[in-house]
Image 1 (cartoon, rainbow, N blue to C red):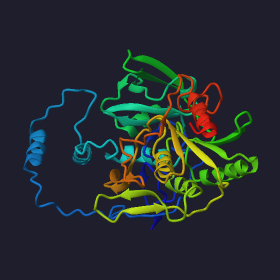
Image 2 (image 1 turned 90 degrees about the vertical axis):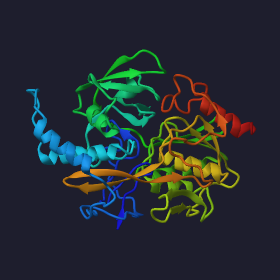
Image 3 (image 1 turned 45 degrees about the horizontal axis):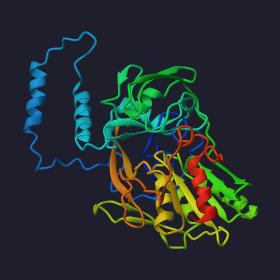
Length: 421
């Protein structure tokens, strides 16, 4: 079986693009032109409805059935706006609670209605505000606003906590539920209650729109002679786009390259592997998919595709908005001593989920974690830059990238590439 795979996220045995480990409150990977298949051999021990339904003899379900029977015989509905759940709805609720008991924000169950909405979100096109979201320390956190989107224009920043959506608290929301609440028809408004740096909450009203974000940007800084290639996401097209940018870099005559991964939430694993292969010898480890002994680990290695001019010095920019495939690429180049990382600690999204059909719904289960060539776990820890460089309030993640004099992280990379310090 072959299937698309995202470096942060979901696996499913179907030929369409899937959401990365971080969730998107609009268009970019949840919709848009990301439907090409990335071929990766599946390691799934189970798929579809062919799950093992054998009762576990070690599980004592006495308390569950006592609760079931007590609710059936004793509960009185005192709310005119609600109805008594059906037996099937109770079962879905029990499965949701079972998944939630693992304490993993990426392991959860979608009942049929929510499963249908989730499937549409990972295969369809719709409008949103342009935020990359994830869960951190129990809070719904903005990884980064995508450049040129309504969220970006509204001033939402990396690290902002979203505590309410349209007046509803996000405290008990999953990431996917939050994404569904923010997503909506173009031209409509969503009201986000935001907490920034521990300050007082404030409202931000954002008008939804169809999101169109460039995948790459590149060019030569004539003053320093440093060439930059910025990657905004990892889609099925990213490897080809990077190849073209690398050819332009070679044609420029420069031997100093900045790869900018700030605010890049990740995406296709294949794209990260293909890009890393330009800088690493054939057979070098790029990332290991660690299944914690439940099945053999999968080691992704370089194809040694080359194309980088001899003597090229490489710096990679990362920040708190760099996640998933960005962290895989940055970690591979760092651990193989192919580049120097500059900026701030990356986000720390390094787990893989499987999406299973279950009783008309979908069960999303974390099945593996990403490990860098040197054995570092990406999950929650992220990637540590070799040179720490802070951003200004106007150059965080996707803001004012690669503008000399206005972007201290880019300027620090230029300084390193031109002086070695």
